[in-house]
Image 1: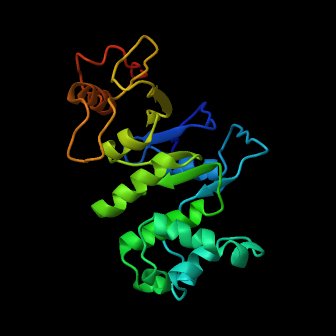
Image 2 (image 1 turned 60 degrees about the vertical axis):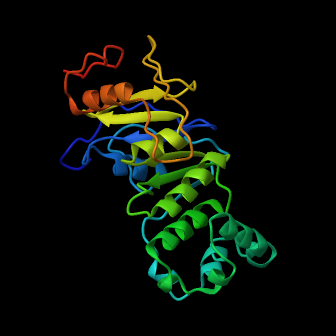
Length: 246
């Protein structure tokens, strides 16, 4: 893109049940790739095929100034199509309840909400219309633990496919079933398929199931292997990982 090539000859598919974590160094093009998938940015070359049934939403990163004067419930209901703003208001109330808001907080002005509450509102605005694919750009940044756990639990229960960027490895381990590494202008896929973390001849990496407590850590050996490969370091446990392009 522009004067710097971020990636070339990418070939990726988002399937109906995919829960994808997109990982890479800062400046590798993660946010640009999301913008291209969203349709906000056009690639210099190549094609993007979208299913006719695709309904995609992106979780906003910043609260729009047009919402600041609204109440919490008004800001969420405003995302609904015109004819549903009254008939489906109950859905907005239920969703706010699921995301940890009290009934009293429904009448709070958006401008008076905490950062964590505003993040939950932006997430609610993306899922209230029931999209089948959701894009999230670093949704875990600057979140308090309670909000992080709410996001984690809700993403686990969603039927929609999603692709999210995050540097929180525990969060990714918990909510995703596939990881894409963006590095050296290419992508590398790792699929999570079984409760145990293993490596096979197809470079499939499967992490152990993680308890709800965020104090427990995934397998350190496999995590060191991935971290070492991503950073370009040597590691004796990375022989099944794809080689760096020369």
